[in-house]
Amino acid sequence: MDSLINTSKHTMFGNLYWGEDGYRFFDNSVQLSVLAYRIIKNEGRHPELLTKIRGYFLEQRRLGDWRNTYESALILETILPDLLTENKQVQPSQIRLTGTDTKTIDKFPYSATLTDKTISISKTGSLPVYITGYQQFWNNKPEKVSKDFTVNTWFERKEKTITTLKGGEPVLLKAEVTARGDADFVMIEIPIPAGCSYESKEQQWDNNEVHREYFKEKVSIFCRSLKQGKYTFTVNLIPRYNGKYTLNPAKAEMMYFPVFYGREGMKQVVIGASGH
Image (tube, rainbow, N blue to C red; front, side):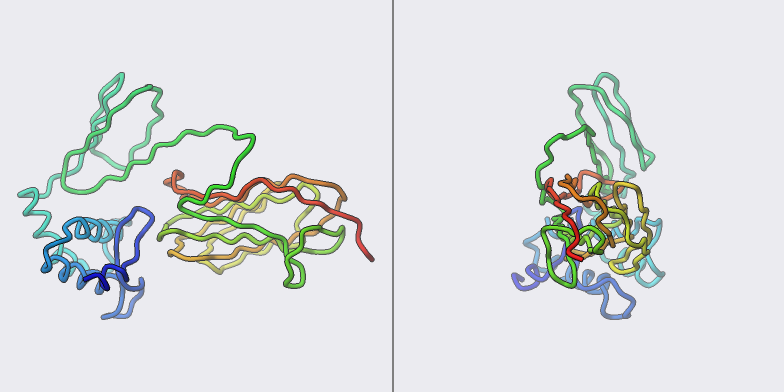
């Protein structure tokens, strides 16, 4: 059992699964996670793991259905008896917000801006509901945050890391993003120094990247999903103006759950005269 648990993987929401997401009929994350669920259920000592595996199956239904009829039947056959046992029948989920006003929410997704200093949240129903709360403000001295994502950046020329840039000599600004768990709809923002401009504006397709936006001060990269692991993103720059510049922190976050994020620290970049 320890060996089985140690080989599990997890999504950013903390749900557990086994295997790789693929279309091989008997070797994909649905088939292997169903098998693991049945083993753990028969063992009977880890009900908290069963909850997290059920969460994974429900997370895979985020687009409204599972991938095919066979997998739908397999998942329902596996988890439905436990849902019915715990709740007699599956009840729709509701969220109750209690503050200055009291609200009951039963249609999702739901978003609201709250100004209460104190608020309580309770849930009823059989299925999980994910809640994210955040505030936005200007941070004058952002420190490095390695939480759900770890972000490291550096400049590279001719496959060597450099600390001082030379005017007129193209460089690569690289950002390495490490995802703590599987995440969907991830945005990576890579600021560029004020003394640089883009040497080229390429759309890259690695790392499940689906789109890039090149702004004057940053590049925004959108990825459909990032599995747990490390990914490297590259921006082609050309330094133009000598001086010492601030490089704002690169960051990675889940677009619809921005509390899952990570960022680099503030850096200084020096651009000197070209040696040519």
